Image 1 (cartoon, one colour):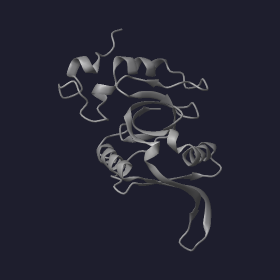
Image 2 (image 1 turned 90 degrees about the vertical axis):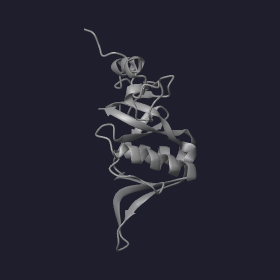
Image 3 (image 1 turned 30 degrees about the vertical axis):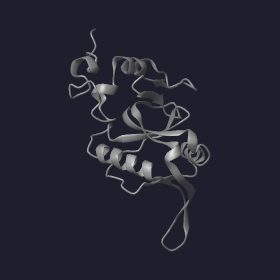
Length: 188
C-alpha cells in the first residue's frame, strides 16, 4: 500500500516557501519521519522516549501511556513561568472543595508567546486546537483552547485523588525549568 506523499515535498510547508506558516502548520511538521515515528511508538511501554524531528516537532506519549501526540515545535518553555501555585478551590463563601487548582503566571515573553499560540489554536478544529505541557519528554496535560488567553495566567483544575493531576501539580511546582509547552495535533 502506498502512503500519502511527504507534505514538505508536495507544498513546501503549506505556502510554497518551504518554511512553516506557523507552529501549527501540519503540512510542514508532519513529515514522513514524524508519521513513521508516530506509527511505531508504543506508549504502553513505560519510559518510551519521545521522537524529536530536526524541525523541532515531537511525537510523545502521555504520562499514563494511554495516548500518543504529534506535537509542533516548542512555543513556551518552562523558564517562561514566573509563578506556579497550587491549592484547593476556594468558594465565594470562603469554603474549600476537594478540587485542586493550579495557577500558572507567565513572564512577559511567555505571555506574548502564549497569547499568539492561543489566538491561533482557538480558531482550529479538534484535535489541532490543543497545546501540550511536556515534562521530561511526556505529555502531562493537553487541554483544548476555546478562546484566546491574553493575560498569561493559566488555571488548571482536577481532583486531588487523580494521580495524573497530582503528578502534573508536582511536576509544575518542582520541575519548572524542565517543562516545555508545545502546540499539539493529537490522536488519542
